[in-house]
Image (cartoon, rainbow, N blue to C red; front, side):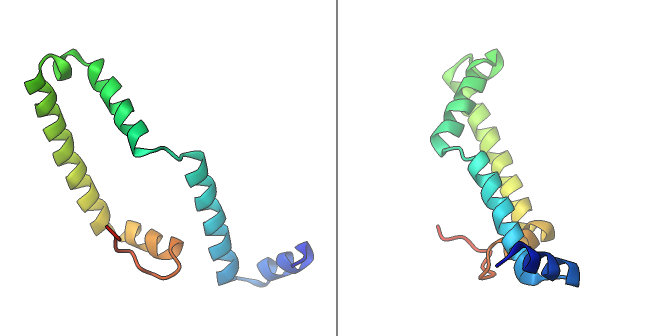
Length: 103
């Protein structure tokens, strides 16, 4: 497709395919730029906790901190799953409209 044709399509009004292609390109750029493994996230959390004397003063303190983080994470994930904005975003990004998990 030529640049001229793309411009004409954009200038003519809303183009659902163009919007989807743009969303896909933006999401891919964001994902590529922010790709972090679960292990890297865990390592980062461990370092942050190690730097906090109150969180790492004993195995019990570490366990209490981890339990609290676990509760907060579960609540935030549940809130995100209930969010209409998150659900709409998921529908727009994933073409098949399936916003459910595969786990």
